[in-house]
Length: 312
Ligand SMILES: NCc1[nH]cc(CCC(=O)O)c1CC(=O)O
Image 1: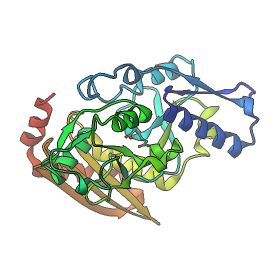
Image 2: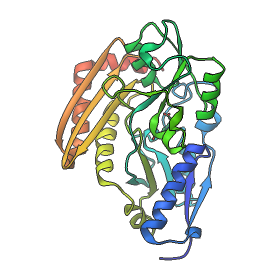
Image 3: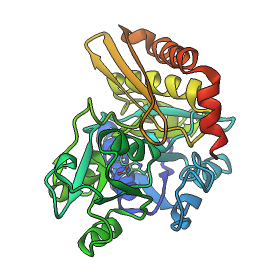
Image 4: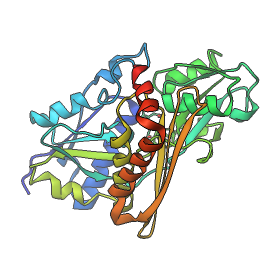
């Protein structure tokens, strides 16, 4: 191997940097590389610049990845580290997802200073979240709450919670854990009531498709069960993801060589939902996800899905 460092592109948020450092550390330990062989390079993305509106309004998917992918394509970086949840289902030509690290807890955390759980919030209490999935799931469980769009990094959100701007918010437990801020969670939401976003809790590594030096190095840190789960979830999303305005949730679980999947599409107000449950061999991950997506399209009808698109 040449002794040129592997340049690792990341966003600048504390969570993104922590994830990039984790990939760097795993790469060094998998291959016995010295510290100076990995170099984390920070890029600002549009998603980081836009702070005043819901991301779906600003263009949705791709906002956290585009600038990192441009850096890969023009050779300013060798790999890009992303939250799998933020990855569009279609990548630019010439780029591939080469590895997934072992998945963290996929569940959402409930954070509040005034209630121990979503069920304990007073009627009319304000819940802040920018995620259409979380908005729809909250409304489905508690139509009496007031749901508002709420952005910013974890620190900003905690401050707004402290100042009483909202009575509760929801965040991925995985992100809190990676930031060493798990203690900020008031509680953890159950998977039945609160299925995660496709890809939640998983870190993925993107490379150039023709990078013969880096691809074998990255492949060594891939976690096969996580990769199978994510292949299923991304296939499901690819069928349904006509619009980033679609509240959509789902989760594949690998148990030995078996895969179980549950996917859900909701109306934004949480009153309508379409669920698909599927299982099969882990080796058929992609087909299971795709079939589950097609099953929902068939039942929900293009009309329901088109109505969601029309919202954007
Ligand atoms: N959309 C932002 C984003 N992308 C990934 C995570 C958390 C970490 C993960 O799911 O792996 C978050 C923040 C959140 O949803 O709380």
